[in-house]
Amino acid sequence: MAGGFPSHIGRTSEQSRPLGCEETEFCIRVRQHRPDWTFVFEPQSVIWHRVPAARETFSYFRSRCFAEGLSKAAVTRSVGVTDGLSAERSYTTRTLTRGVARGIGEALRGERAGIERSYAISVGLLAAAAGYARGGVPLRRRPAMTEAS
Image 1 (cartoon, rainbow, N blue to C red):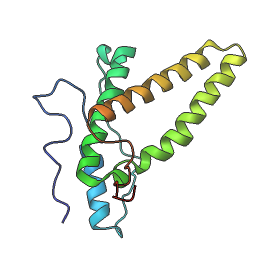
Image 2: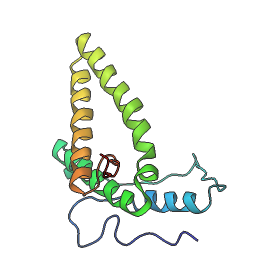
Image 3: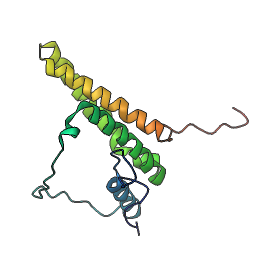
């Protein structure tokens, strides 16, 4: 049916970048093969994860966002741009836009954290877009040129 996790996407011992998205790509392939299946969220499940101090820095955040863009480029090569970026379109246009607007509103009320949040969201988005572009996948498909064009 959909196969297993891809070996060309995600983290491997040979890569120093914090790549990911292997589970995303797998779920998209399952959905493509079995659109009638439903993924279920289990809110009572618990995962403990220790985060090293090196991952608490802004430079790691930027690097992780860039790596997320690289990972999304690999996903779209595997499953197609439409399916590979469907969640990102609404997340970017709704969630991130609201976060920036909220941060600006807080900054206008004198809360410094608001402008810092807006800055971080903007830098993260730009880093992810740069990673995606570096990953070699066009942001949108251009129509093929015809002789009449």
